[in-house]
Length: 236
Image (cartoon, rainbow, N blue to C red; front, side, top):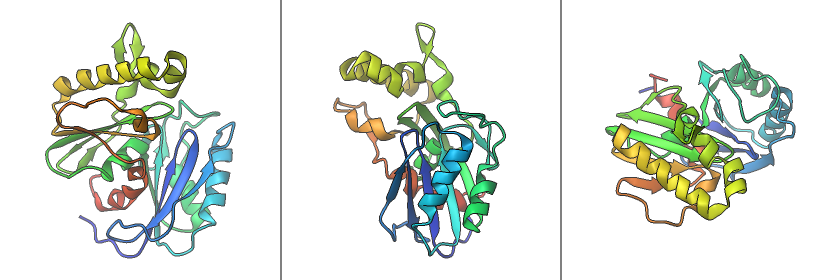
């Protein structure tokens, strides 16, 4: 595990908002969380401009962690399906490093949220409920990258994301949407058999039904708090 000194600026890029907070080397917040609306249209240029504006609120940090809702490989975005413009091959970590003048690591937002939630023992999974559906899987605290479960079929020829993403919630209504969330959870558990399945993201706040054993909701701030562990996991 890497030796971490100083503070980390952790940024969570979401479909509706971009949030940031500075963490100390133990992962504890040392500033208040700041938030700006995600620009519309959410092109790479507009999102990076908003990130630049947001990072101007912070002064004392040595490195940056970023969570992004899409596939991110070695700091470079492969997909940004819920955003606008062409996100293919956008060097997100490099661009934000240039903006801040600090080294930067970037990963899928569910990966970063998972880092903020997991215990680090056995197989643990995360799904995030927001504009789309993010997913992440960890083995003994180490990330298995690029799990895009949201794009896998769930039922009736439609994917998980098409049933439990934000567009589906608005179309179906909260109660029907929650029924599909229950179905998604019941489908995931016997396939993957995680020690714990964490439910995060902005729409996790709507879950008001009893969850199966080993499933729990985590606060959305985990998407920021996980930023420090993105630097600690040398397998990333």
